[in-house]
Amino acid sequence: MRAHGEMSPAAPRTSDDDRLMVLLVEDEPTVSKVVGSLLDEAGYRHVTIADHDQIPAAVERWHPQCVILDSEPRANGQGRSWVDAAAIRRAHPELPVLMFTANVDSMDEVRANRSARSKAAGFAGVMDKPFLVTEFLATLKYVVETPQEAVPDGRSLGTDGITVFPAVGGAASAEWAPADFFSTAVHELRTPLTSVLGQAQLALRYVERDPARTRDAIVRTIEQASRMNRLLNELLDHARVTVGALSLEVVTFDLGLAIAVATPQYEHGDVPRIRFRAPREKVYVRGDPDRIAQIVGNLLDNALKYSPSGSPIAVSLEVVGGQAFVRVEDQGVGIPANERDRIFAPFFRTSRTRELPGTGLGLHISRRLAEQHRGRLWLERRTDTGSVFTLALPLAESVPAAPGPIQQR
Image 1 (cartoon, rainbow, N blue to C red):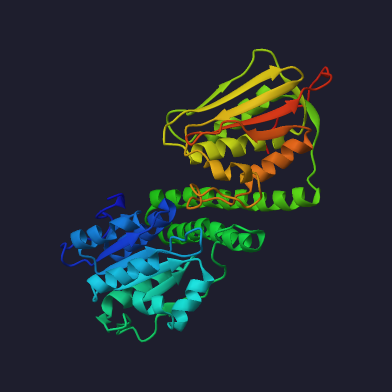
Image 2 (image 1 turned 90 degrees about the vertical axis):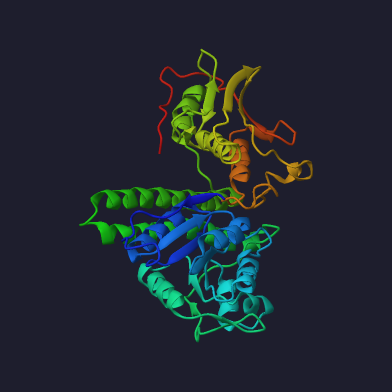
């Protein structure tokens, strides 16, 4: 069982039998930490798992009084939580199930309670992402204190009004077409926004009695706000490259230095993973240093995200003829042969990465940026394990006495 945590020491302790047990199924660590902290404060014991397949074993082992499911959206717009909830109710009719969701269609479906799957799932409550702390705790308290009774069609009695809060957004599409992309973007924004609002509310509650916890909440708020900012920047860049309105601050600069300055921000572990190899002599190109760093950053971000933890990422710079070649090589999931021709299309995500956070815009924007610099970006390695992306840029025709500075925005 892949668990984020088991019994929390932060909850007030009388005896194990006195505190109710909650099973949280959430694969986003930042959200699970927020919810776990709230459960601690409210006096619940809790176990958090990330793998929906482990729900039956977790229920049998921990005997929770409530299960909270995340909506776990799939590429086809469907969520596992409906099936999981129905399975839980069949095996344990008395066990209430809550669901977190950022999908407006799911919220409406639960509210109407007419579809076969909503009746089978029998959710005791549904919480929108992001949620208000007071509403979440009130909903949970009501659910665990209200007896659940199964009826033949799978609906639950004893919950006269399923708790549903307003939602904005939509389901992700299997094809990731532009018309559906904005629903996906809403979902991508909602996950960090849930964490931001939750951590901010935690900080407000702990500001006087627990300074260390307050600081931790503020740090996580900043991290998730930065994540939202990156997504918004991708949306803006896509709009700009689509209409040819992306501006460049063109200077002659040392490409090796620009890459060396950009790469450290992608190192988050104790042991560095990125290995950068460059010629001793300076490699001058002409263009926007920040935009070139953005291309390399997108490649590094993908390599780190889709590779095994701790595996090395090799970045190399070399000059051949009148061009500079930057290669980023990983040992990740690779790209299926039948999808390699589409990886630079806007909104496209491979079948191996659709369940991970992302917009499907990074490679598309990177290629357009390369083209604006009279360069090219392509997938060089065509195997099922690992990838090598290559960026080619023309060398500067002349080198000024004082090349432009490299700065990070």
